[in-house]
Amino acid sequence: MSMTRTADVVVIGGGIMGASTAYYLTKMGYGKVVLVEKYLLASGSTGHSAANVRQHYSNEVTVQLAKRAVEMFSTFDDELGYPCGFERVGYMIMAREEDKPAIEHVVKLQQDTGIRSRLISREDVKELAPQAQLDGVAGGCFEQDSGYADPRATVGALVMRSKELGAEIHELTQVIKIQTRGDRIHSVVTDRGEIETPAVVNCAGPWAGRVGEMVGVKYNLRFSRELDIKFQLPAKHGTFPVSADPHNGIYFRPQTKGFLIVGLTFPKELEPCDPDTYDDKANTKEIEGVTSKIMRRVPGMADACAVSGWAGVYSITDDWYPIAGDVPGLLGYFHFVGGSGHGFKIAPPIAESLAGIIAGHKPRIDISSLRYTRFAEGRPFRSAWGPGNRG
Image (cartoon, rainbow, N blue to C red; front, side, top):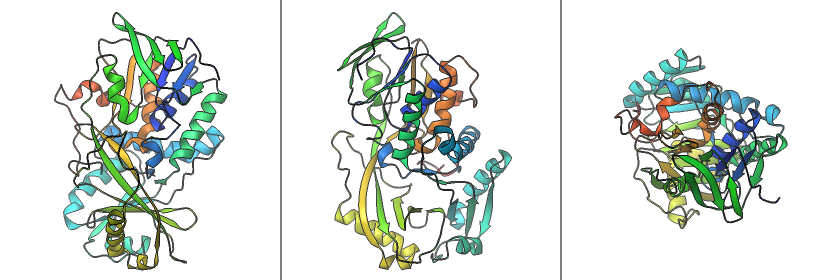
């Protein structure tokens, strides 16, 4: 497809944030929507995501967003006309005694918001995951409507439906410059030509800082390499929910057709990386380390086989929550950046509300607390779990 020369809005980035934003803008009928991606769709952090869709969060706005996310993923196949791979298997935390204040805080917030979440006993944990041995587990919490999705399929579904509704999608198209006139956006210059537009949405993932610098907006983002290992499960392993295991520092979840995905959880040391040059493959030591951790929780995994391993990149803000909205003093510049490990699951509802703001509508969920200026205002988020992306 030839590059358009004008647009009502240009979305930069073809991961879950950009794809969701383009879809909701198009769905709202916001004129000519153009998405540009420097490589291929979902080729960055999104494509490497474990794609857990949980509702366990410590503050009201992210609980609302997570609840809306589960509603969205539950209906995406019908709404978009393409499968996103959502499986409602539930989400469980195998809590230690010291984790009880955090889970009690979150479960109350969830229940007050109408989420079907509850505190569970040690016996309940065993019933939900009968293959597990429960060293260090005092109880937990469980949300029955949560689960996981396919990250690449979800992005593909959002983009395909956006195209059907009139959006233009340009892969292999790199943004070189954003031009302004006075205090407003004028155009986006790519390696395939210039697009005159009054609005741009920075959804560039780990490259969001470079895009922001084009208009003088600076983000304080850190990058961390994040690992996942995929195992072939032994025959007749049985069912289990997406599970967080703070005692062993891992989460694990089923994957269709008899597989298991295991990753590491916070608190842990960040592994700083360059998103352009980092190693996206798991090495022998990493595979062995994750294997030993999952075997401590699920001894039957001794008979499992690791079949693949990969690493993605977290773009981490100072408080571990995304930045979304506009930037005071720069008309037409919007952003949705800094997923901090939450990006996949809450991207669609944030994008829905952000699209409403761009279109001049009342957003479905008030995301003003995700604003860019919250750090300078001394109003960062706090988590009941402390630093990290656990909620």
